[in-house]
Length: 435
Image (cartoon, rainbow, N blue to C red; front, side):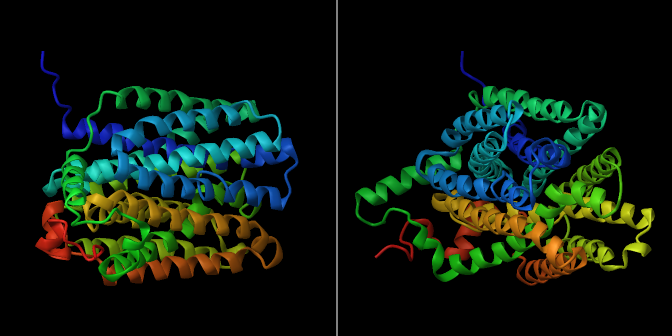
């Protein structure tokens, strides 16, 4: 019996589940941050270090850099199959953690697995998606990215009375999800786009007409411009988003004087809005209307949302808190991350697509690591409103860069985009990075 090829949507969904366990691990840590701080007696430096080296930042950055290169060398399936085992090992350290070193090690290991897996999965989704529906398929990862935190925070509300045990159980459910996804991926085929590109590359290498790929290819010509553009869109924006994802429960509780349960409930509401925004705005409109206009509108909403926190604390009503929660949810569902995932997969050739995405993801999460370490210190020394002013600036810069540089790639195949950007000779292997 001939084994039936999985549908494009099945491949997409299995790959997209990476975003569920990625964002889920970040928000599970955020939901229980105060509980772990009380249990372990963490000070500001330890708290900052935990955020800086978690799957929200530093360790994921390193994982993406390594995973991206391995993706282009050995295939997408190779990486996105085995890195989930690394993720599960890290989660076990967290679930059974009894001291700060165990918790920190768990966060680092989870981040390494997540970083590698995100690059492999996002690349796989774009390569398997039909050209006319690429935004819809890529948006599925964003959908899962919002669904994971929504489920995590909803579970956190239900187990709130269990204290730290409840947070351990929330982390535990991510182990079960990762195990199921790992099993499903064993049955998935390799990316056809990568297989064809690898075959052509090997032929040209044997003929001496092409050099092996190195990171230097990303630092010249159109590639350098693209890297700078994507980092301007995603890395700068993520300084705000990573704060929202990891520290907002802490901010709601310590700045907004809300209970832990209310804080988690607000986060659930925001991620539910993200799910709806992803489905109806990015997936529904991303292949149908002008993407530059869509990017501008969603990005502007984010700037307005963060600007609310610049108002005097006494003027921050619950209605304004709800408005910020909604605005952040809309942007996180249909904003910069969704466009970055789409554009990064479209704008580089197959033979180093994952390498490029791994590098830009590394820059993004490394910057988030520095900011995560600095943010609690800035709040303690200079005040919360000063930190928020910086985040408003970050959101505005990302808005401008993405609006000005948005490429016209809607409805085009990856091969068409590559030929338009690099020329026919490049597609045949006679590229600028070859002597």
